[in-house]
Length: 212
Image (cartoon, rainbow, N blue to C red; front, side):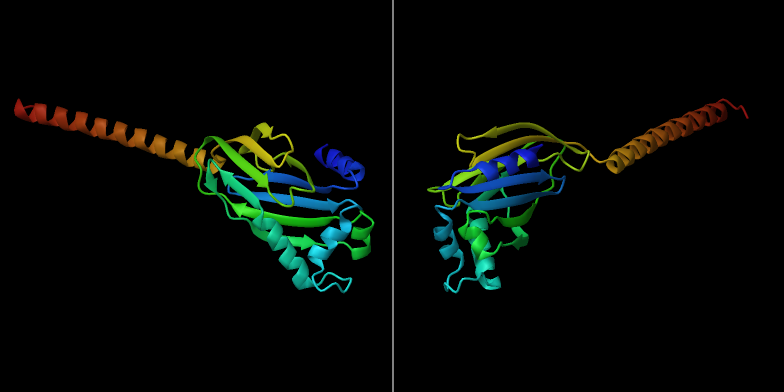
């Protein structure tokens, strides 16, 4: 449903806006961001000239990589107030002519490693500061693939440049199993120790009073 809504918004966005739609996926140990950027036809030449630095009508590998790095530098991501480092996974650029027609979408896929987090509620904050003077923004959290993560509230500012996602992290099944085994072992050791002490006390008592 999120994908359909995003696609509908992209197809209907204003000609003078630079639509930037982010989809965030939260896993227990990392966050992934899929960011689609579509300049409207009225701002397409401005965006194209920023990417195509030498003006040869083509986007080279170096030009594309530099532009993506600038975009990532304008994004901010933190969990429980702790800043996260975004790393680029891949990116794709449309043909320059598609950008000029206001139909070309730049696609960026990035991720950030999460610190070790305990069970309970956590807050992930995403903010996009790229080209606010012409930008129009969308941001949504996708359904997590891991059953250890469940999404709660999603809070956005007025223009959706900032999204705060409240989510709950649960312990994995193997950790719960290990905890159960350790607890069972501890109980068994305590019971065994108590039984040994009782046997020792009985033997000592019998020996003291001359019983065998």
